Image 1 (cartoon, rainbow, N blue to C red):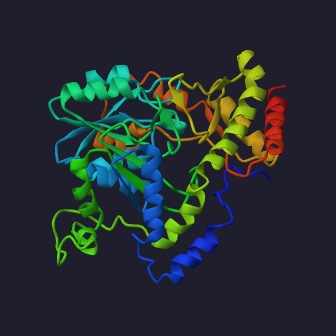
Image 2 (cartoon, rainbow, N blue to C red; image 1 turned 135 degrees about the vertical axis):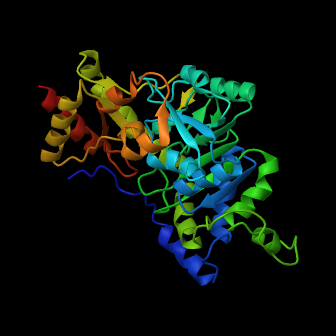
Length: 375
């Protein structure tokens, strides 16, 4: 059996967890939390990285820091995970969905401006599969209309757009370290705060609305309730697990890219025959091999392919059901313009196994199985 996903593991995780336990500092913001944050700040160039208990929580923090309020509107693609929308619905916002580009499955930047009203407060681009959205265009639109940009870079760790780390371009960036991601702490995430003026408030919101972080740095003589917030700080044990991967993040990235490139090269013949479509990577983007997907002719073929792979011991899955078609989506959102590609393209997409530790031999078995299916 070739699993669809196996969480990353380097061999040092248990040693670091043991160190964290022996330090008697396990509630968070200990040595491993700080090491993780420093590594992320170094490679992204962001002003401040704060680990969170999940990617969902990083989005919820960003919604608070962006001052999203009742009656505001937030623009995003419908082809995303529910957390992208939930974070803003919890603040009372209306979600405004726009269509995606069929080539990258990212938000179509050309459709954003038409969705802006006097209630619009923020744009939330989602970097699907670790491939960057057209951030130059999105940032220009935001600047012209006075909007916040919150990057949902849950899948984007080690992905770049024009040399800039995904998550470091907008006002805030949100990472996920869920067990399905390239780097994992089981459940976890991080928020990148890219404007100096937001850093202090970010620390307060993350610590239940208190200035506890400043107190531990000796900047105040007691800590107190300062703002809205919640318990967004993860355990030091989770951070210790994550650090073992972040310290070899380049190696993990390279190994994943080897598998991604193998898939691409060995499935090109089916794409050239028009039987499948492969991922498109714009020239200005450096992706992180978060996933490898193919697109079948239609939903019927996809269903048969997933079933065929399962029969041959290979795990494969489809991805999001577009949010605007869900019961909550109908209640909390509207779709601006035509759903030309979101539903149609989502019904064709199939994800193949992709994880650190997947071998080229296993990739070869998967490729051979797909070729047999199309015979």
